[in-house]
Structures are given as C-alpha cells and as structure tokens.
Amino acid sequence: MRPRLTVAAPDTSATVPTAELLARFHPTTRGRSPLGPFDSLVDSSAARRLLGFEPRYGWRDAVVG
Image (cartoon, rainbow, N blue to C red; front, top):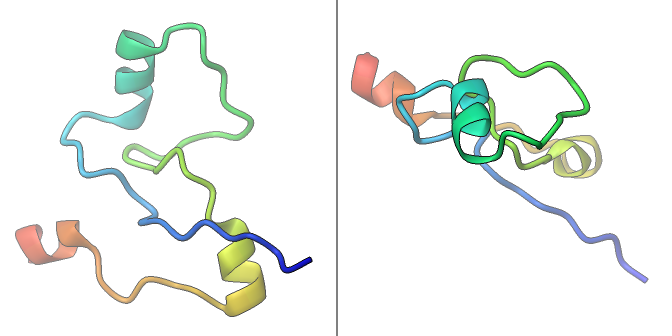
C-alpha cells in the first residue's frame, strides 16, 4: 500500500490568528503542539519528510512584500 499524503499551505488564509479562530469556533478542540500565529491546522509533515515538500511562496509574502 502506498502512503497517503496531505499537502497544504503551512499557514491559513485568515487574518485572525489560528488560536483565536479555534477558541471562537471550536472551543473544545485541543492541539497536539504549539501553534504559530497563523499556522495551518492541516499536517503536511509526511509530505515534507517523504517528498521534501517545502512551499516556495506564501500569500502573505506577496501581499506584504
């Protein structure tokens, strides 16, 4: 059986910090690791580990920079 991978952006598209969104919309959800201000809730670590996937660009860089 081949491994199944999830590939997602490392950050959310929200302008509100992830922890604040979780507290507001999913108050009983608990994370397994600390979150950065806009970290995604989708784990792409297997794609990073097995395929070497690292996004080159992020939308925040394009908007800010």
